[in-house]
Length: 222
Image (tube, rainbow, N blue to C red; front, top):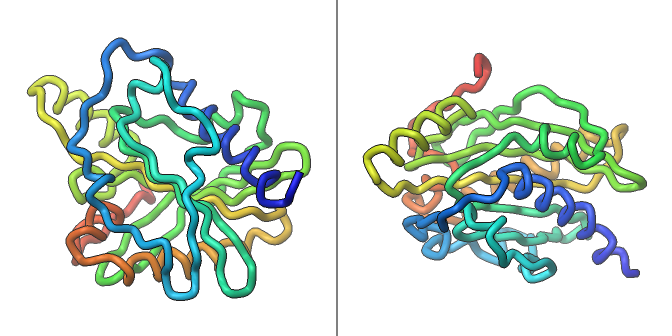
């Protein structure tokens, strides 16, 4: 098995773990299809990307809560890689809980602060490990161009369902292959990528990923 293929296996397991945590929704989630309108480049300031979502099957009722998914591997000029996952979904669940239930060793890390093109937001972070594969996982939720925490997204989900209103809700994850003793290097790689991604998108489109310009999203008490 080649090295890239081997690296995709734990990523697929983590994705499936998150999906199965939601159970089996009765109705297909209908979104605004924002993800299909976002122009997230394959080439980003020295990063070369490739789509990898076709590596696994997302058909079936258990995936009804997911409208669209973008999953890419990006590799920089030094040959270092990471994965970008963006889910357009009707519900989100904490990756820590799902990873634990699927047998991953999970270490919850401090929230991280990012400054991306006149935006400041915080993201959650974990270190996960299973067998010989370890990952730094950085994730956040952006609903209607605002970065929110888990409580806020559940309240918004309930409110929008009551008034039968669609909303642009995305979970963004950056997964960096690493070992526990090199998390600092993985974090620097993720910071560089996230900054480059922000500059590579138009201001309006970047708002769906990072929140509106001039905003500060603080998860320190969330």
